[in-house]
Amino acid sequence: MAIKGNPADTIGIRRILTQVPVRKPNRQEFVRAHPEPQFKAPMAILELKAEMETYVVIPEVALAIPGETKLVMLTTAINRQGNVFLWPVPLLNPDVREMAWHTTARAAVDRAENKWVKVVANMSAGFYDIWEAEVEIADPTWTEHEFCELLEIAFGNGRLIDRQDHPVLKQLLGRA
Image 1: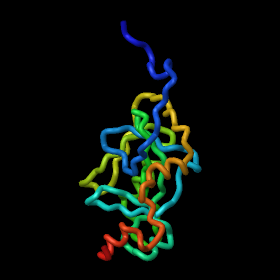
Image 2: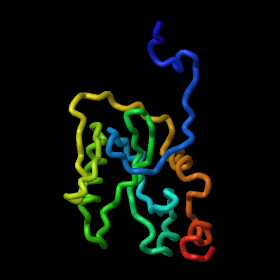
Image 3: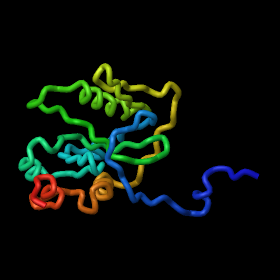
Image 4: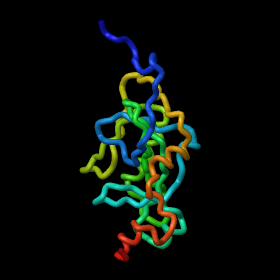
């Protein structure tokens, strides 16, 4: 006899959110972006490519390391499996020539507020293709966590750079 529904619902357990990745959607997943403005915020981030780690940097420190940080809108997103992540979408920067990658990323997150979308890099064209689900898919069940809680989970354990003597900055600048 097969079990119907989600057995966790009947025994009174719930999933604990212990990780909130900071990443772009991968090319094989449909995602939604949280439509409420309180679930996104402009921030400076520092990406360490070799370590595959992302840090949030306070503005005063970001000014001290020009060219190392990116200004993004950190947007709460979710995939069809219910996995929440923070999507760093580049902000429009009037001091830098606009790239099609950034324009189409912003268009994708805007579309994802109302529809399930897939975002695929079109390398030959130099921008993201946005694919919308052809069938009606139910709206996601968003986490009960507030945005500030998601930030704490994503950037806890030293991933907030709030001073110039932070160990990551010391390493980045060759002082450690």
